[in-house]
Image (cartoon, rainbow over the protein chains, first blue to last red):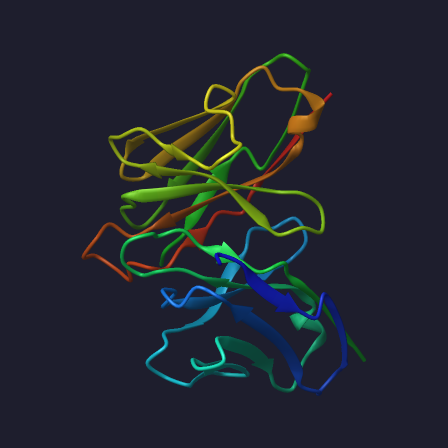
Length: 113
Length: 119
């Protein structure tokens, strides 16, 4: 029940295209859903996060879509650029109480020219 | 803001020696810090949760005597890998959360990681 399932495992998108990564969770107590970006040999960096009281959050080229009834959320990267090539992790936690982040398995994104 | 540093960034040691890794929140106070381990091409695995002034809480399967965690101040937590062996070689990453009331309570800010190689 603590798992967060992430797909796809890897993704290749052409420059300028839209990259879409999906995550699904089971635990309905989760109420905080961040996305992290990680470059090789570096620590993860917070990209964008959403709480379940909204269905969408946009920051620049990055958008989170959240479907509470389906227990799914996704990351959309618009106008994907070669610099976006990295591994992306979704995560979930309970803001109050159990503070631990449960991570997805990661998606390796490659943007090709 | 919300910068977390780790030291060292990489370390090579001989089997049987102990290695200490520092995690610092540079511009904020962190009541809680977390230690993760990451194997190549895999996700982050939480090892322990470290609260300032109290004993760390370890995840199931993580040896407390093997991975000693100390959180002596609101800006510093240390992880000591005792009697390291080649199977302890990994990428160790810490994260920190703001002290309650001073920032977003749920957000974890990650350090750059420490690569440990045990020969």
